Image (cartoon, rainbow, N blue to C red; front, side, top):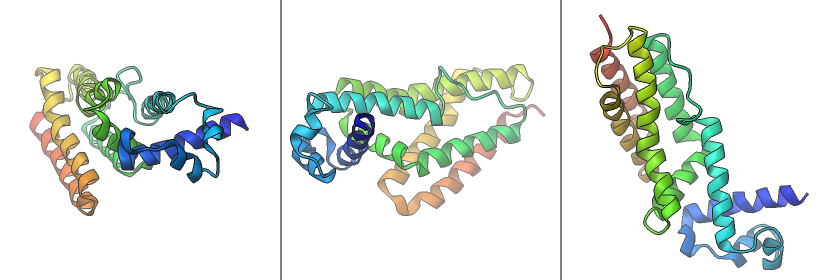
Length: 197
């Protein structure tokens, strides 16, 4: 029961932090949204900062489990169609999974206030994606699927525009379907440019 309450608190905290940021979040409001009093929150977390850190830990685990990470790479595709399909699965998850969307919003809001949020934002929005796709592209080059080139530069060139369009979906949700079409077209263009012919 205590674990369920702890999870409920973290879920509600993610909602609140993604809307109001850390500074705008209020423990009294958080408790009320769960039908608790403040002491009910403090029974599980000693402070707002403890909730914040537990939430970041939870977000890291969730993202790694559902999306992948440099520690848990998806398998290297055996074909260019598999690369395109894997890319679009990742994009769909990133854009449609409510917890990942809220996590991205929290990191975007808090990257200027909190050092840990800044490090996670850099990892999830830039370096982690580049490292993941560097390994994927390197493996695809070894399989003879992609032209030999600098895999890190290709990974950066591939992930940066996709990441920018995902952030556009957060800011302007009405452009989501168009952004997804652009990402798919870009992915196909990139593959056609770098495939071994």
